[in-house]
Length: 234
Length: 311
Image 1 (cartoon, rainbow over the protein chains, first blue to last red):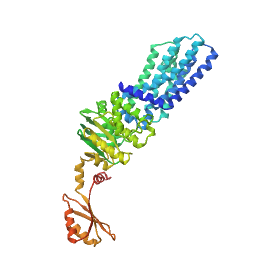
Image 2: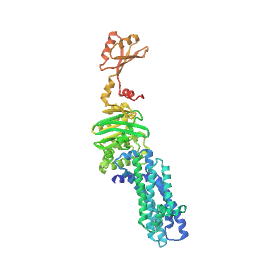
Image 3: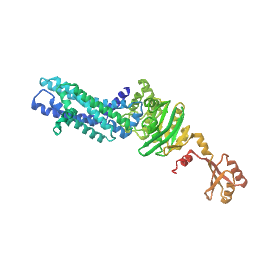
Image 4: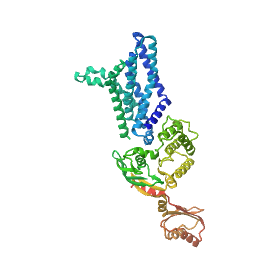
């Protein structure tokens, strides 16, 4: 695990050396701020529902942009040959990179706490859904980061990694909104597969073990698949 | 130290490495020689656990690459071909990262990086970003990367590519110095390099070993055939030709130029015996005026070219 920690430090640092981090964080904050405040004053409700309702869509777009370089760039420049011949196991590399993306997502979310604070100044904010929402946001972010990481490990082209990751994340987000196409026997299963469905439970302040299990499973499957790809694709 | 057994690597239908067997004892500097695409890099990549072999096994100190890749990677320092480093990192940060991964303590890290910085001539680029530095400096950073953990085995894929002549000499010195205690395996297609640095040379062609021997032995083998260069004051070439080709050991006499000032001939000789005394006797007896008399030992280059010629 010491190796994973070193990989994490390296990749996390590299985020902030290149302009990518600042651009992605700026876009995220501008969009989320706009979505939040454009409806906030119309409804006049002291809640963050507007923000959380659109968060999965934003994440589906932003997180693959965060993760796209993690493996694709290494493969493209050949530096993965250096990385994989250092005394690091495949797990060290995959977990280190995953962690760097996850912490990046956490840092991206941090400034949005200002919405909650400013709302609480003007009205009586119910903190339950807010905390649940942030817990959900982290879990959702972890799942999407895992998916983005997997997409990045599959190709040496960052653009392909981005589009692939985005396609999967969008599908998971929109799945439970497309249910009217399906026969009723499949409804339950497909709805359960949708990321937004589980996330909105958190945003309502409900921490249900089924939702937790969903996000943890997606995360685990994506990371494990990435590990297999790394082992196989040498 | 290292035992390679029946090692093969296929890329689709292409066979890059074909059943290679090789034993490398501790403390040897082994040069892997071959034309482009011979399978040198593939062999080194399998040795460093970067790519798995299609067949066969490599054991390092009794540990198989299939079962103990992590332990083997710990024993090895590897410089991949053309040193693909992280572009966005500072040289210093990069070396720190490698030192940490290799588990050096923080005091040890500083000391080790400082020493390698001097040894590889990196003082001027330590605080530059990798994408700003030149090809030769990248190569040097790659070398520092390989030596950082003070590994027992050093695997260098074309270590002097992209370096200037002075730097090449320095790097060779470093390699020879390290080779006194450690095992070094380097690949190159520059023959003089293998000749100058390696104790033992293995020539690979089309994925198979075509020659394997101590550099001295190979050189001697090559040395049994040699060229002798002779320059005389202008005289009758036919007489020279017939007199010289009569000397035992001389296989062929070729006239290089028949200029006004000098008559130059090249003799191809073979055999254990040195033909020079006999030649000198002939020249003396005929009272030719000798201007130049030079033996050109054949180098590894000749062996290499003979062995790796297509068909």
